[in-house]
Amino acid sequence: MRYFPYHPLMNNSGGILKLGLLSVAANVALMLVKISVGFIGHSYALIADGIESAGDILTSVITWAGFKLSLRPADADHPYGHGKIESLAGLFASVSLFIAAGFIAHHAIQEIKQPHHAPAWFTLPVLVAVVVVKELLSRKLSAANRGLDSRAIQGDAWHHRADALTSAAAAVGITVALVGGAGWEPADDWAALAACVIIGFNGLLLCRAALHDLLDGSVAATVSAAIRRAALTVSGVGNVEKCRVRKSGIGLFVELHVEVDPAITVADGHRIAHRVKDHLQTQFPQVIDVLVHIEPSGPCPLLINLRE
Image 1 (cartoon, rainbow, N blue to C red):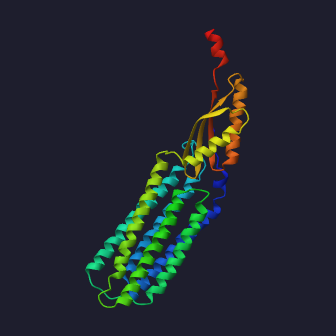
Image 2: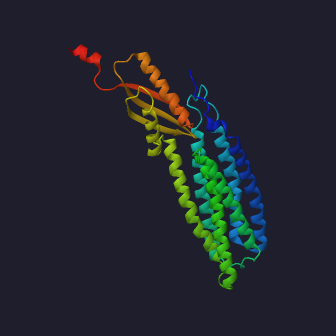
Image 3: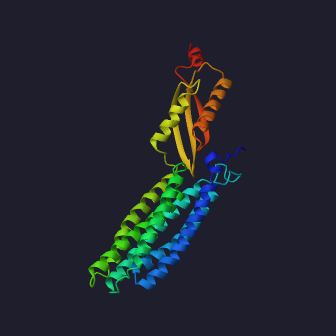
């Protein structure tokens, strides 16, 4: 039995995994800073943000472990590889976004109901620093993910952005509380509540994308169109009748029905099929395997002779 190997994008994933370690380390450091400064400075939004970062540590570990496991080569039990683990990790990341949004919203509502001290001024620069660090991490992960289209990495990038959003909202709320004075103490809680809407919405988008991949949904029309055009450039291919592409982790599996001259031999058709496969895997590094089905182009001479 033949198993599908790694493709080049999988083999060059070492740098991506180092970003995962950086992601976990950043969450640990920022969690400690936010919780300690939040308690000292009476910023309940900052404390909630820090607790949410504690959850991010576990989420990042599971997300990146899932991504690494998805890169394992195919074996006897999984002849198509382990790519679906990556989509499951993305689904987990989306669910954890929902949980984080719900936790912060619940905490913010509780604090709005109960009067508390206004946050101290020194919590503001801490939040600004958190926003900068988290947004930079989010952008770095998103940039690294452009060539991979990984749901797991996309989810971790959005966790960093969600943290940046809640911290930015808290910074706005603290500013309002400090400027407004008495009566404006819950402003940072209202700001945290508003950020939950954005976090929950993006969790929904990530969840939908991960489920789409798990259910073998079609890839973007532009991808299948590009694969179809590339196949048509191969010598001997008259037309591409069908082109089905599904995503498995960061890789793609392609199924093509190509039309060839019906008068050629089986051996010639077999060679054309191999040329199509080799060409597509050269043009699209994310393609793990290509299944090519040969169809006759136009009326088949053998069938015509039989009818006569």
